[in-house]
Length: 446
Ligand code: FUB
Image 1 (spheres, rainbow, N blue to C red):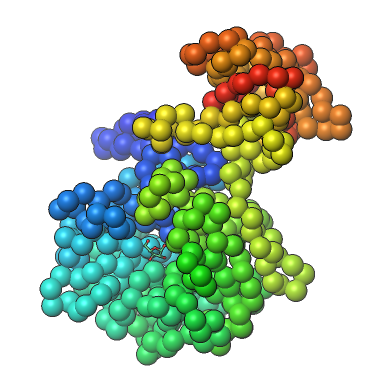
Image 2: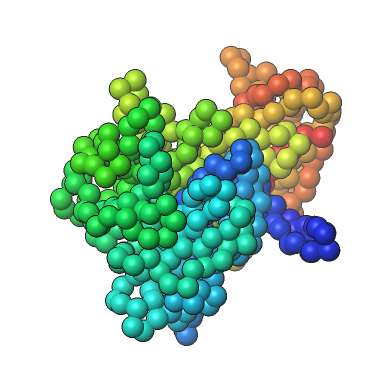
């Protein structure tokens, strides 16, 4: 498992935080969905839904089941800290804690306070369907204090809050279509009548509104069902409440068949990113989802290039980390498969199987900066025995190690001296030399 726990002593207070290291999916210690990513104080904070498996008496078996929210943070989009639970259904006065329906949240900063918005069904007498509540903190990681009542005038899911260029705050939500209204300066009450946002396809469920601004243009992104599975689309406007003009598909329907998707978009250190989710860690049950991130790029005219989902995700991986080559950025047409290391414990992640002559994977952006690295370690096993050629991608590839993996059933770490030592950020290629059947968990440099 690619995470470890550490206890921190702070002024006599013991904090328990998880450190997670991952490509896509980003979070490997729990299921996460509906990511709202935010940049606060130079770090990325991630506020996802927290999917769990329903059981009799705890949620509706076979359906979405969520009882609380965690927040995660990262300064490099590769190493994530789980700050633990920030809001849970049984600690919010107005929420019906029998419903296990703490659906997609959002969080925004205003004048040094952090406002966390979340939908949930209210207790009896609070109206049918979902209401939207707010919890407030002085720090993006909490502690968050829930307001005693939900926002008056909203019935719907998937809240999203944005502060426009003129300082006016807006809240958006979904109820089959997309809705929006102004928020008062206290961020807790509506300051205008809700309006149905215009300019979107008429047919098919639309949900998960997420608005962002770039160069004076407001982009409304949202999942939309045109067939059976949601795809991500967007529309543009020069006004936060529209009317919007449909602009295209941001991400196609998931190849794995996960029927929901849900997105947020941020600019972090001058690169734009799309956060979304898929069913990587639960391919047989798509109500247990996992958050991913990929880079997003704009055309000259301000429209967005469709984002193609990757396993590699984003960020630079240190050569001294366990590099999960199953999160490759490219592979040979034949002879590469990925599989769970342990199907009974999927959070342990995946392995790469090389099973055709000369099959290969490429893993981009590995940093060898400022490290006097002499050895490569490969955690592998092979039913046939075989050799891996490790090279830095170039034409021709420059071989830095030849690693012989002995025949055997057990996983073993093979450590050998590097033939040459890479410098800087390099793309790595791992290739089976000739024939064999070889499984790799990770490679690392020391
Ligand atoms: O997480 C539950 C629902 O699935 C959300 O409201 C939708 O956006 C979809 O992700």
